[in-house]
Image (cartoon, rainbow, N blue to C red; front, side, top):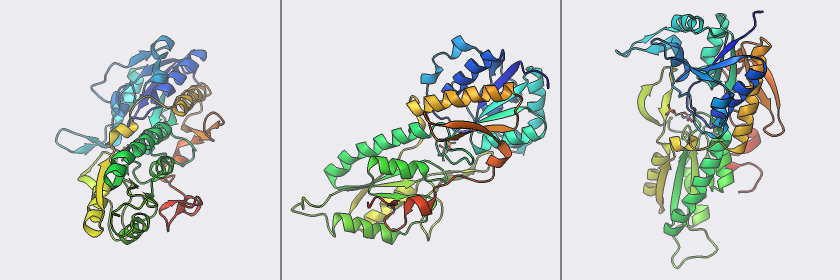
Length: 372
Ligand code: F6P
C-alpha cells in the first residue's frame, strides 16, 4: 500500500456544530502521521470544475476551530453523480471528481456528512477512491453509530427555545406549537421535548390523530379557558412537532414541491397546519413557530467538541492504516465512548429512527414510562 501523504477533507449536507472540531482533530492527528491536510470547499462541489484552490490546513490554522459552529469549509448538497446544470438538467459529473483528486495530489478523502454525503463517498469508494467517512447530522438518523455530530448542540438549542416559549404561552394562555427539524427521524423532537418539558411530542415514527391531540389538550386545559382562573390547572400547553410528523389521515407537509440533488423535499409547515386546526376545532388560542436553521446554529456544545475531535483524530488513524471505505462509528457518547470503523455501505439505505416500542407512549404522545 502506497503511503498516504495528503488528505482532502470536505463537509457536505446541512452544516452542523462539531464539524470544525472534527477537522481540528483530523489535522492534529494527521500531523502525527506526517500527513498533510487540504480543506475542500463546499462539500463535493470542492472537487468539481471549476476547481477551487483547496485550503492548506495545519495545526496553527485550525487551533481554535473546535470553538466554531457550522463549517469553516462551507457546505453544499452537491451530488456529483446528479449535478444540476444551469438549465436544471441533472448530469453525472463524477469523472471530474476522479480527475481532480489526482490533479490535487490527494491520496485520500475524509468526507464528513450524513446519508447523502456518505452515499457519494460509498459510490466513489466502490470505484477505487480511498475514502473515510465521519458521521454528521443534527437528525441523528445515521445507522451503525450512536452519535452523529451536531445532534447535542441542536438539542441544546431547541430545548432553550421550548423553555423560552413558556413565558409568552403562559402569559397569554396559548397552545404553543414548536416545529423542530429532524427529517424522517424524531430524535431531536422527542428528546428536546422531554428536556424542555413539552406537554405533547409528535414524531414521524408514529402518525398522530388530531382528535387525540384535542382530547389531550382538553384534559390539561379544561373545556374552556378558565375564568376566574383555576390555579390547579395549567393555562397553556407546549406541543413539539417534528417537521416529518404527519396525521394518520394526512401526508407529509413540505415547504414547496422542489427536490434537492438527492431527491429530498424540504419538509416544513406541519406546525402551522396543526396550530390552525387547534384554533378552528378547539376553544384554545394557538401559535406556531418553525424553528428552522438556527437550530443548527451557534458554538458546538461540549459533547460536539469532544466527539468532533475524537471522530476527526480516528479518521486520521484510519487513513494512516489504509482502512478505506469505512465510517467512524461511536458506541456510547462522550466522554464514555468507544470508536470503531464500519463499512460505509452498511450505513446506507437504512435510517436510525426512534424506537417507538421502547421510547414512545402512543397514548400520551410523550416519552414512555415517565407518566406525562
Ligand atoms: O439534515 C439536516 C436538516 O437540518 C434536516 O433536519 C432538515 O430537514 C434539512 O436539513 C433542511 O435542509 P436545508 O438545510 O437544505 O434547508
